[in-house]
Image 1 (cartoon, rainbow, N blue to C red):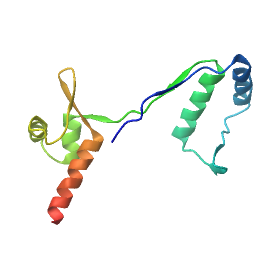
Image 2 (cartoon, one colour; image 1 turned 60 degrees about the vertical axis):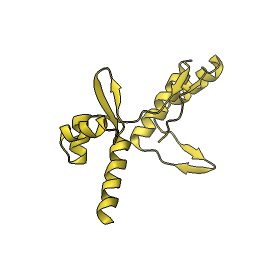
Image 3 (cartoon, rainbow, N blue to C red; image 1 turned 180 degrees about the vertical axis):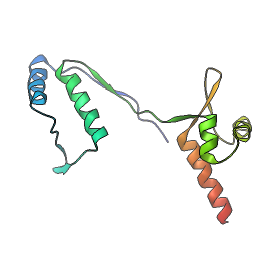
Length: 125
């Protein structure tokens, strides 16, 4: 799974920032249109959109990036239903990709889910 590179957008001109700030002060109702179709956002997505718009309204530049969930080896082992030691051995052999944060191993959630899918396919064969 490839991550999309962060995208930075420059601050709005002061006049546009002021207009946006006045619009946001009127309430919390945010309507999103994509290709002419109205979409209702989940509360978390709505809060993120409002946060971005609020930053623009204050004349701030905004950078948006995605974050892929990283698990500790204990979390990954519990999710996979295997022992922590067995998981560490699999990362040592390169069976599950691992990243290091200092001396601590971190495993992408997507990597564990892919390994679990492989195990299920192997059982069905």
